[in-house]
Image 1 (cartoon, rainbow, N blue to C red):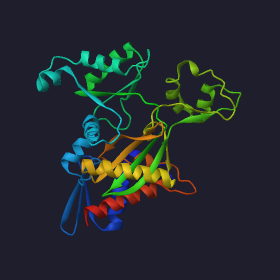
Image 2 (cartoon, rainbow, N blue to C red):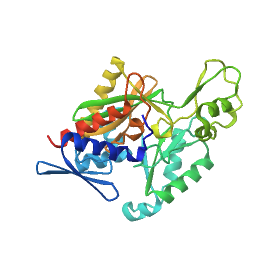
Image 3 (cartoon, rainbow, N blue to C red):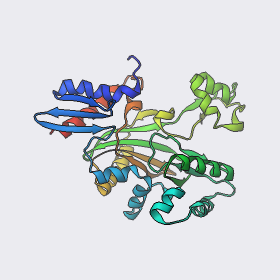
Image 4 (cartoon, rainbow, N blue to C red):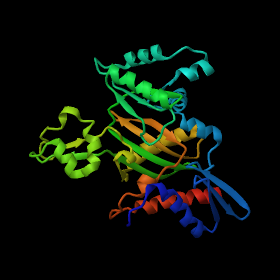
Length: 322
């Protein structure tokens, strides 16, 4: 398959399916708004939002803290997210005068010995962008300042050692796709150090991984030892999608995502599930279906990722025009 630009996959899929399914399509606002017309019916896709979910469900899904609090209220295991507003937002909307004391209290409550072990991220971010692992006071201060210069709020959550992270795409109660996010890794040969193994495998892309490994770069990796070189599970940050066939895993995740979707009253979503010490937790819910990084993976002997992505869009379009 020729290389596909992920920025255009969304448009390419819609264009191909408009011919196949027989509806007219107009691309507006630099392709950010898509107008779909068939049999005197009109639907719009705005960015990655399909108009299948209610506005309330969509807004809650985008808000990590709100999603966590709703899950907690309904006794559904979820990764904790704690919201903090920047000072302009606090004064204008909450009447409070700063949040630094609250941030420090939260961090102290979650410290492990002298390790902060805190994740800082935008409350409404996607794709693993501006997500930072905090391990010291200076990192905390600089990161909070950086985040508040860009966002009206941020959220903190404890850093968990995640065994596996899965993504589920769900439409009206049906699981259309389930895959493992396999983080970037290298396998040792007993001769080369970690830095060399990374560059040999990932080339220039491996440079970004080196920055996160500090003093481990000269480590000679034992033969056949597998070492993960990134703590992020995002496909856009180097992870690979591995489609899951295991019935037991599928059943456990299916039960959990059905509960999540029911509580949020959300119909079309991608839901991230983390496994921590054998327990399944909700990581986050995305109402926008971003599937480009999945679709551009090189097909293997079992799966054509582009066609799987296309089938998800096909079912969504059929649902819209049913």
